[in-house]
Image 1 (spheres, rainbow, N blue to C red):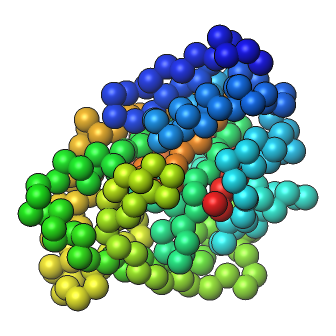
Image 2 (cartoon, one colour):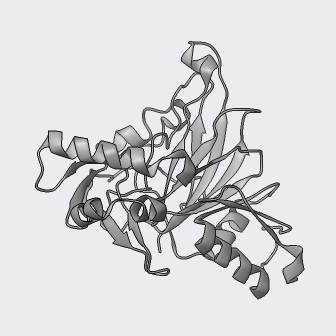
Length: 281
């Protein structure tokens, strides 16, 4: 594939870019891959449209970013432990992955990122938000930077059943041997590739700060979440069948929106099926 075949189109000024002119079902040449990987570093999350991938092709593409790993609390699809299906049924209000978070921040070494492929999506609804955690750190006051750089957050996976058993389309996917995981991470991390500092809070999993009371922790973490998810630091992606998102979990958070109003009202809402590969490092 020649360089001029690819078009990189920013989705928002802070984060996100769509990449056009590439078929991910086919092998990527070095020139195309160089552009994709640079866009990944520059925009933190990249999107592709109209991609038809077999599980093997999904895995092959995801492995260009790094080593893959199974999700700790959900079984992989038949024959492909690296891939999980994320399912929201029409009567469900909540999406798996709802709420602002960095994936698996409760692990000692959270994953590098993920490759998410839309299999079945509604005409509207089920969008995903992404926010730039470089900017979240860089726009803090000097005094707040001095404070957060001395602190560590406590990240808790909670019980494994909470990750799949509460979702009807995933209710039979309890994973044997899965255990609760709790770990501590600095509130400020340095990206191993870019060298830039970013805020690391992961609100869905981080509920406490080492050395602070619950009330003190909540006050600071609530402020940091509100600051990090300001509109100007975010983008919103509308899924279509065949859409793909690849995000850098080390410097971005995301949030699958719970915006199925029909289900909220107790009626029949939409079904949403996504397939995900997790990039370990």
